[in-house]
Length: 336
Image (cartoon, rainbow, N blue to C red):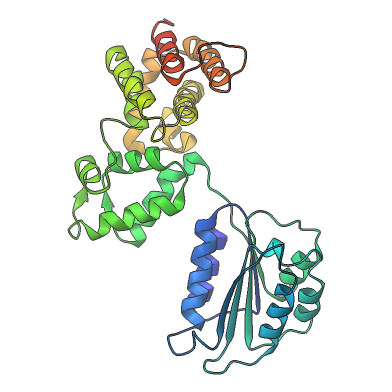
């Protein structure tokens, strides 16, 4: 995140280099970097003359030559040419011509090579791009970083979300940053300035239910509310597109893993920092730890492993979503 923020700040200051090799699995950061560079270099008057975007295809052998022809020319209207090559792995097997160009590049052209996945650091295109410009790896953030990432985005927008609203959004979206960004902008457009956006508003504006979500399920489990938990997983199993079984199991596992870690923390004042959760929610884990002592949590991990195997069709019959979830919830609550 620090590297990304520094890169964005440099671009906004006009510090632009001749080559950007952007690779990795998280499209959000890649798209943002490309947009910032484009906005900085190209305007309405130059877009038809000094700008080119190519979606490379394996079947087109002329694309690399097309790129080379463009990068060597001088801009017609603006100060720079800008060429963006998406899916760059299809552009060439060895990038021999691109490498040759980068060793003696045109100072009036900005070349962006975007890869949907990691690029081998041993490759010459990686090494030359590092020497002559910027190489940025766009990594997906971990699930336990999503809450903090939403908080950071809210400060930038700015947007005042209640902690429970942030939790609902993170539960529904996982680490899909593009979706989170879209939803936050939607909330911004439909809320008043400085208004605290509570779960009710989240539900009415973007359709994420405060009653039917992963956060609510772990909350019910933490409070030992069997009837409501069964009711919720029944609803979720009937809406599997919105609530994938694998995410439900992963969410419950993450919840109990945090309880397990909470038990081992000597100084409970450090719990929110160690667990990487907002201090607002620490009382929920404190209460849940009273309901689920260490020995019980260890047993529940076995039930979660069994549910995970069943979800993948391993060693068990009767593997429909509802029966898997009902069995899991029943075993969790009856494990006392």
